[in-house]
Length: 512
Image (spheres, rainbow, N blue to C red):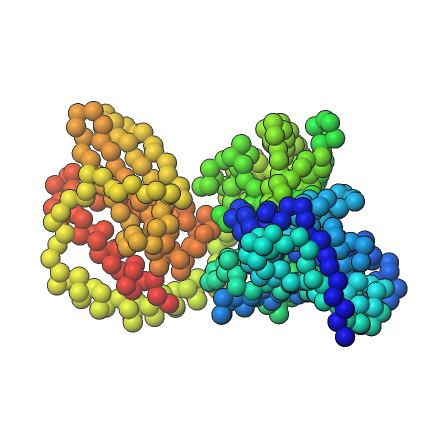
């Protein structure tokens, strides 16, 4: 039979009502629960293994259901919440006795649970205690009635049982669509070290999470001959910059560039704080612009000591120390004999012709089938279509957040030109190549050339790989200038050429 008990949740009850508006991302909120599980397992690892065996690992299972308002369950086989820890565990902002671990603010479980849900419960059995206890939170009722104690429902259970299960329903912030995939990717990134060390088995919606480090570039220095001894472009990092502040780990270059998954992952106490998954830490002082080669290749794992973190544990509180840290890091990255930044800037993939032959045959065969099947109806339509009689617009609509935008001043035949090169990720832009031309007015001629990365042809054949995007962008620039110079030399309706290319690429050649 259940034996009612009480657990105090004051002072600070009023805080619970405002936690739903914290600036969390779903994966960092869920990470708070996993942090508690890891810390509990670490604190009682010896005792747990004496009961369950020396090979026992921490197992954390995260279930997410998006129907009927949504619910989230986080379950672990850690040590549970012991009787003496109950008041601290459920009272807002109750600092734990030790702040040297992953649970340091006394708010992790409470803030994440209240951010996710107005109704949540904790069911737990502590190692060595033969009682299972459940506490239910109804935040609206707690705040409205100024409730200072909650009833604990208890029942007898096996003395060797130990677990905690947190269940949240009627979610304020219901992950859907792509966010669900991002949660999985970010969680395996955040807890990669605990997973790789064999301490943690982490499951999300029944899938066991794992982290795979990208392959590291192993080639000669870009200024050397391709036949020279290859170098593994990775170096250990370890420096301090006074007053107990230290950074250590590694930095390296990716074998394949990536606009989304390069960058540094910054850790504290083995838990990733900043730079998870596709949100790598990429300060401009080191990485430059998004269209630079080092931005695509440089990555690493850095453990930061001596810095405090935000209360949501998704960023470091640098104060005035970030710039000195970055300046020291930049210097270390380019030190000989492994100058990572110089290699990233100068290295280009050089593929030998013999390596291309088998793939080239397959590619040609696949392309020929596409030409046979898809091209004829598009060309027939273009043959019967009137030529493009309109000149390019004088300017292009402003792109709010282009992927890359660079304006280059040049001089042609004694006249000044201003060429704007832009990469757009806006799916509303239908054409692969868009051009504007503001003719020379006696002072300067302005040309804008915009390439759509969201175009089906780019999605099919380049993705976000900068080494694939660059040659296609150069071809687009050549087409744009060919059209402009043809029109300048007297060719009428020169825009027909670009219009037909855009049509062919979208309706025929983007298909496989």
